[in-house]
Image (cartoon, rainbow, N blue to C red; front, side, top):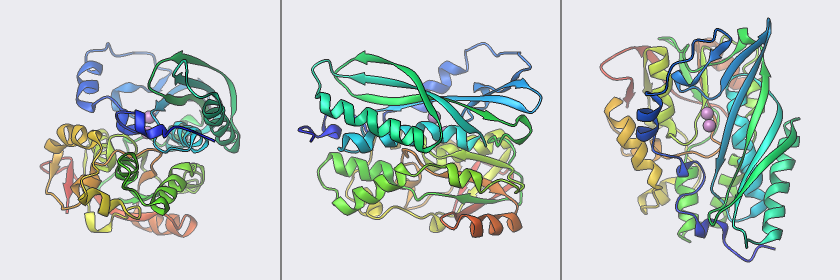
Length: 336
Ligand code: CO
Ligand code: CO
């Protein structure tokens, strides 16, 4: 059993440990653009994963994600890191095939904890029908863990963030609030039942939510992770050249999330997200701290026509409506 509290020694937990989107955006904008026609989706549109065409009907989908502990139980942390890394493949409509692990661990760290982290990750990767081919490790005082995942996707059925159309309904497949709950845990003020429910949500693969999209006219999809609901909505709105209208009263939150946000358990990533996305947002809500909350292993944000949305919800009942897509207005995002 673990002696240490994994989340106690990290500056920010999970996807909240991401580099600020403002910094990333500035640096990536200076990288030369690639002109290879086999690159179907590159980094230019800030999509979930890259897509590279292999042959007609077949493309590789590749992504990498690793981060600091979001929960104290090492096995659960490993499994969440894996579910999160696989998520970008699902968000693109792909099927994960292989994974390489990325491990950063203290040289004198607890070996039982390490074994639990790696086992939790491997079990989740296997649950996805994916295999681990290898990995790489670095000794460092702050724990980080995750995977680079490669999958296959039909190039004609890639769900990017670029196809949302005016009139579409927006659905979200997991509740919001993993950032505040894990910050509350780090501060020792979280209720065990709330932490357990948040962990259960983060452990859930987006596979079923992605498979439920099959056969529907899904115009755009992405997963909600470190940049928060508004950050990932911004990416979809910009790539699709539309305005995304989010009705904050419809957004569902994890149990305890509102309470912890009011208590000030706000991860540092929230302010980075607000800094970056705020100027793209018209309107405000008293729930803003949660709308900018960095999610770890969050759900899918899906844009599809009204009638299809209802059918999707009957196939995948955990999905709830959070807003709609309109013609591009004054700003890419409108919060009601
Ligand atoms: Co993503
Ligand atoms: Co990612």
